[in-house]
Image (cartoon, rainbow, N blue to C red; front, side):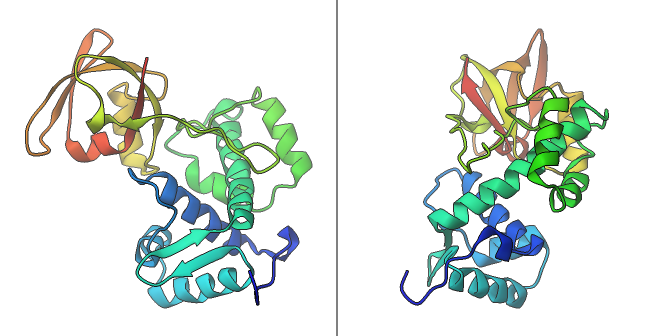
Length: 231
């Protein structure tokens, strides 16, 4: 892009990397991905003020890592997406290490992994991968990006869009809220679990599921954060 400087990875602070990763996650989790996310959604996710987001967006745009279009929002450039995925790689590997090696629950690791990831070298990251038995997904089912800054594509849909009476497999859970993760685990609604949608009440009402040999009722809002694919 003319007039912009392209950042080397060493130029990026931990906060810059976090912003890029969260832009990627916001777009990835939208039901209809079009590349752009709003700055207000980013501010809400990061729990920072709108002016703070705008200042960081300007910096990242000037480094050639973001595009900012009025009335559309912000989107990652190819360089920005690669840096976002490399950041997510370390974060998700740290989550897998904390769960698989250190025995933490999946509801406990998000913040700890974020703190760890900002300080991990590539060598330590690779050693953690080996100790965690070479995971390809994080404990919440999200794919772990490859070391070259690419990622596997998941063909899944929100649970509230699943086909009735067809067996599906939970691929991933999009929340990191501790109480929701604990609740989902208690309901056995975790990545890898199979289920069938038996009934969906009208007007975004609750859904009845069969999970194994048991029945569950989940609300529309909870169903939105559970992604599934046909078995």
